[in-house]
Length: 468
Ligand SMILES: Cc1cc2nc3c(=O)[nH]c(=O)nc-3n(C[C@H](O)[C@H](O)[C@H](O)COP(=O)(O)OP(=O)(O)OC[C@H]3O[C@@H](n4cnc5c(N)ncnc54)[C@H](O)[C@@H]3O)c2cc1C
Image (cartoon, rainbow, N blue to C red; front, side, top):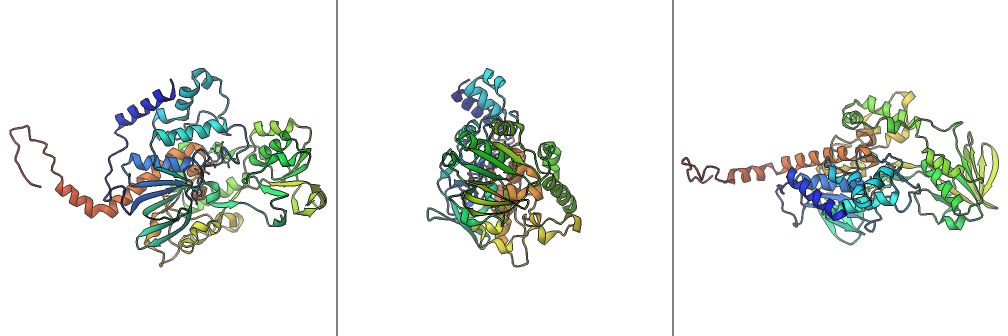
């Protein structure tokens, strides 16, 4: 079935389900106040916008700073050959089979290709997301960044890079891992190394510049292995990967907690249980996918150094001078595979609202054995992903700020973060926003109900011409 036939199937499915619902909020689309502004059109932003539109919240805008087709990491900084997840994940299906990744893949590549597929190539995943944006006619403006969020009365004000200031009742920040804080840059690495001699895996790296060089990789997580393999494939002479631990993590607890229990139930756990669970996940860490390990090991120049903490990194004769477990080491280039930090204080777009946003450190004090400062920086969100107030002077508009990205993990689980939970997350978010809009619009909606005069009995003998 070609893509056009699939698009027709999507239209049929949506029609059968009565989706998207008719617009119902107090304000029509096109006015000077949006019901919802979704920032970020990666998979979470697409899912959020689609789920909201399905619920009849159509006074909606969706922006992304990236060009269309370059949203998220898939075509830029993701260096693995395929997604790490198994191919059977449903994608952004929102319960509709024709919107699943599998339906798209079978339609565009054929049934045999689906059977033969091992894992999803990054480009295919991105093509699927682009297709979804189109087939669902999401109102995307590309190349537009949110610069600053502020509030005026009960509304949020969004200053955009194109000079516009949008007013919105709800803002959904679907801004990805980076949007929850930024790359984790350990203080032991001298900033003077940038950009000539160091980069984080979340940055664009021109690996052809590393040809013939010795590359050091700090960290042995998934992105580190893919960066190491890419460097060697592009002609790096050697890659030394330094890992603090004496052995790699063996079990992917993230995958072990990928089920509807965790998706639906996480937010209903007590603060103590959620903290304990998250501290456990953080301590365990995930192993790299075996595919990435084999990809790096295929090169004789690759070496993993276990139990080898990097204690300092700065400029040196070869480019980079490292101290590793007390010993001097050198490299021509350093790749930091140190993951992402959750820290809203690092997000310039949140500067004005930050003092009012409660974090887990404000809300919960763990027992000393579970003290983890990095978890204390996660925002303390409600079940609709909304920020909660830090103090009595927090603006009412804060209730309309939804952090629909990795920052939500401690409060709601990894549902607005990794692929498998994203439909659950979007369903939850859109339901809560629809309910909040309904509550706020209730006086208008009740007036509309009073004025509702569709004559049900007109064709029967019992019809009475009444004005409501
Ligand atoms: C290398 C890598 C590989 C991964 N592989 C997998 C995997 O195999 N399986 C899995 O389940 N998960 C995986 N993940 C985790 C997760 O699925 C991805 O991070 C995914 O991209 C998250 O989607 P998102 O929509 O939250 O964020 P993103 O896809 O990052 O989208 C966020 C969007 O927001 C935009 N944006 C950010 N700030 C602004 C702003 N101020 N104004 C306007 N736009 C803005 C960005 O341009 C971006 O397009 C991976 C993550 C990484 C980094």
